[in-house]
Amino acid sequence: MIELQGIHRRFQVGDQLVRALDDVSLAIGDGEYVSIMGPSGSGKSTLLNVVGLLDRPSEGCYRLDGGETTALGDDALAGLRARCIGFVFQSFHLVPRLTAYENVELPMVLAGRPRAERRTRAEEVLAALSLTDRAHHRPDQLSGGQRQRVAIARAMVMRPTVLLADEPTGNLDHASGAEVLAALESLNAGGITLIVVTHDDEVAARSRRQIRMRDGRVVHDAPTPGPAPGPAPGPTP
Amino acid sequence: MRAADLLRLASESLLRARLRSVMMLVAMAIGVAAVVVLTSLGEGARRYVTGEFQALGTDLIIVLPGRSETTGLQPGMFAGETPRDLTLGDAQALLRIPSVARIAPIVIGSVAVSAAQLSREVPVLGTNADFLIVRNLEMGQGQFLPEGELDRDMAVCVIGSKVRSELFADRPAVGGSVRIGGRRFRVIGVLSDTGRAIGFDLQELVIIPVRSAQQLFNTESVFRILVQARDRDEMPRAQAAVREVITGRHQGEEDVTVITQDAVLATFDRIFTALTLTLAGIASVSLAVAGILIMNVMLVAVSQRTAEVGLLKALGARRRQITALFLAEAVLLSVAGAAAGLAVGYAVNWVIGRMYPALPVGAPAWAVVLALVTAIASGVVFGLMPARRAARLDPVVALAGRR
Image (cartoon, each protein chain N blue to C red):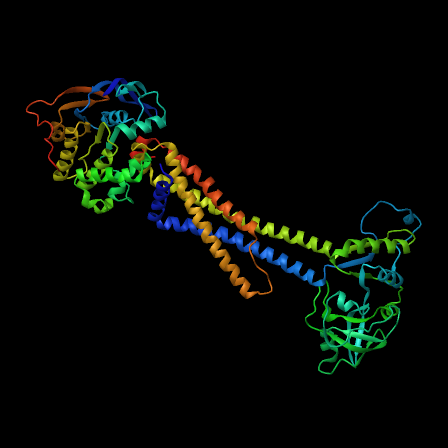
């Protein structure tokens, strides 16, 4: 459960004060599939970073699963990120020198999990994203879609409750994008909260709840109209 | 994060940035090798010199006239009294001390020595038969001065090999004669080439009986007296006895200086240790330079890898873990560099050892430890700043790849 109340995020850029988030209040329940849209500079990425605990609001209150987060220290936030939140980025952010398997394993390495546990869990996640035969390839030996699926596997390996995707299909062609979305949606079908920031109306239309932002404010927040495709009924990608 | 994983991640990133790693490795290796080689040279020189002195005999006491210490004004100075000279009588008295094995009085001066038409100004040393043993000399041809009373004047001489070749060329020297200060001396022996002594060149020396030298230089005194104790353990006793006997003979005035080879040795030891330390200091500068290079390259690495740092933060890495990762890279590099430097240093030492067998090169243990500790410490110290900078990056900014 994500609860934002009166969130402000202000940056000082030169002598100008930028209000990236201006009094945003939101509640996102467990297992929701939300898309956030808006023109660039509307604050959607900042919102995602605040929800992902990468960025601290200048003002306001953010409760994650009932716990207040705004007063926590850096290390406590890092711990929460490790346990509760998975990130998927537009540019994948795989570590280039590590294989797909090692990239997926990385969050568990940082968390100090024993080797055997890491192996079973990483292999499980890679299999779920049909990457088993690519496990020992480096990112530069993978296609864009495969890279993003590795990134999703990495985001999932710690069994987070929230999956945050910032333009996950932005760098992909249509087919790969569809493949990646299908993977994300099947995870959502498994119960994870999925929040996708996107420019793409087509992507947004697949979500069940659409949030639109402009100038740091939420200007639209409603369930997706029409015959929503609903959660993908778990197609194995 | 587990230590093994930390090391694996750090070494993987080093292996991927191969050129960068090799450059840092080389810098660190040069620093460590410089410390090892330079201190080895200093230490080698020290051991060489002390070895030379030990060859002269550490059971040697040297007695010279006059006090070397300044003890303020002595009453005698007002009466215009000069320190009493050492005499042959003093030398004979010293020989009666039980802990003394041998003595060799020395009178030295420079005078023209000629044979046939050839003439040369050389140092002439007056002494006795025991000088040969006391100074560990070897004869090349003939024999050394004959045994006998100290005050016996004989016109015989022993010449250094260089004097021999200059005055006699190819003619046989032993049995021939030379004129020393206008008096004829028969040549009874030639010193071997192998004899050596610090201070003056034995090969350029002419040795005659001490009494003859006194007459030649028109003096009753001796320049100094070498005293050899029965063995090393007798040294303190012999030294005290020498002092006592001379004081007794000089009306209760201790007007001689008694020095031991050990004291000379200790002085040289100090000088060469200081030299070695200086060399180590100079070499340490290159270690520091290597450390700064590591810092520089690590800083570049951090700025090249901001996105990666941001990612690690997003994945839940704590500040300490990110610091540890970058620090581990710096430390791994400096340890590897130090190991390579040791290998290079020992290799260079080996080559020097082959080229100059007389010089006992060998890195002193303290220098090796110092080099390793400095190398690793500089890895830590100079790696810490970039590592902390990485850890402090704002994850949002870092993920965007900006700084």
